[in-house]
Image (tube, rainbow, N blue to C red):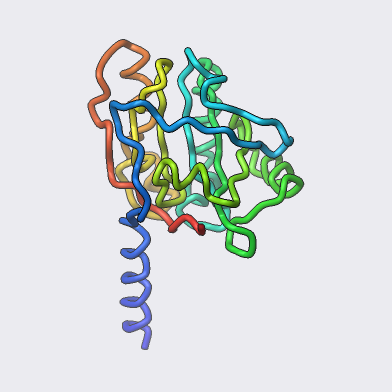
Length: 203
């Protein structure tokens, strides 16, 4: 029974590792979909507000073990601190529908933000899935990098280790950091698209 149980777990993991979205994905090299969203403090944000800045979108669900890998290790917070200190706008997006895992109220989002020591610019509440569907966000985490001119520079997984193992963070290649580093140096993004991995976004 343990063997069968393990196989079932593997099958389940494979189902979420390489999840695909039923919605049209934002296209690298083209203008990123515009948006008007509300954050955990009730403040409204538009993509046009950030013209001239790099923007990172990070799809978030604290109940997902793939997300847990990056927050429990401190990796996500370190990335947020590193890049926001360089002027990047980092938006963590919660698209879980009410009643689904990961759904958050403004109060809960603010509590979790502090408890997790998040250093994101803010947390966007997208319970209707409008922003997630516009970008084709399929997993948590699913990462996007938008350039200062509004073009999408990166769409995909956070790194090249599609596991829930905290130990893998140190040996992984972080695609988000690589994209930002190359773009800020005036170079083309070498890995502009990759397969996102994680738990399905709970639309």
